[in-house]
Amino acid sequence: MIDAPIVLVEDRPDDVLLTRRAFARAGFDNELVVLPDGEACMTALFPENGGRSLSPALILLDINLPKIGGLDVLRRIRADERTCHLTVVMLTTSTERRDIVDSYRLGANSFVRKPVSYSEFADTVRILGSYWLAINEPCPPERGRR
Image 1 (cartoon, helix red, strand yellow):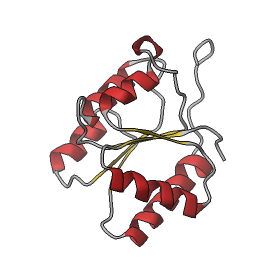
Image 2 (cartoon, helix red, strand yellow; image 1 turned 60 degrees about the vertical axis):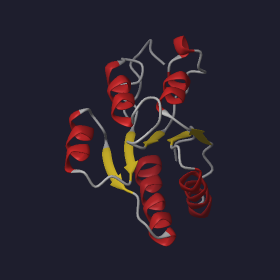
Image 3 (tube, helix red, strand yellow; image 1 turned 90 degrees about the vertical axis):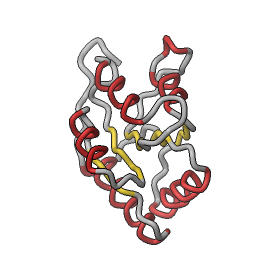
């Protein structure tokens, strides 16, 4: 199991609460760092923006965010050599085909629609966490970088 924080970029308090509960219910001990908008994510990931230079095991990124949208955040993550290999899962309510296509085109590792019911959402979070934190072998940082 990867022992690094999970970053949740989500502006809806109800979705944050559901995600916290679902990760706790699934037994994941990773710190859950909640960032309310794309600008906060940029600050957290890039120290030149005043952040703490997080190296998360997983980023759960909503598409519709205030200040800087999720697709723009994803674009910036993939464009920077320090963050280009981070695991980014688009976790969103969007059903727009264009959002799916754009997410993959910009380098998302996965696109997951948030289920409406809590039990389905909890199952989705358990499966996501199991795969990305326990089964998947992440790309190691290149030598001399992070």
